[in-house]
Image (tube, rainbow, N blue to C red):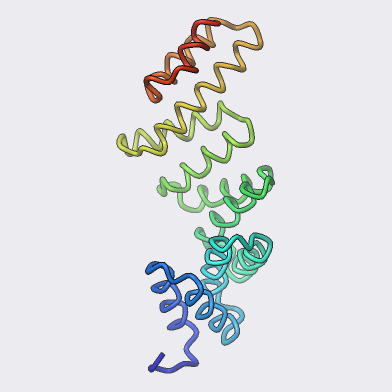
Length: 194
């Protein structure tokens, strides 16, 4: 770095550029230096957490997301990052709190709603997963990830209805799942069982 090596914000920008370029180790080095230079810079902690998560260093990433939120409790990126990280670590209950908070802070961010839908799916709350994922598709009908996730959520909700002896509701869910997951044999089998 040629210009003012003591500028933490500049190092955050450089770290982000390295990360976007696939140079994860260099990104981490720049972001660590930014944290060192300015320990209260929320963006440095949040972006370092993203790098650490990409490297599979989940507990360390969690620490940096939490520090970012201590510095700036309204930082949506850190809330989403921590929420998805906690869900990935098998702590969906904790993660959902952060994701819901992020959606409250920025309701127009569909990426947050998608993450929330996937998190509810992983937590086994298929009804809420469906609700959030349908809203994502209403805003962006071509969102391929949301369509596939919605198909899976309807399928799992259908299985729940089937196990509860509610074949009518199961058939409705399987039919909706087929709209998003056409040609998958397990759906036709489940529909036949209902």
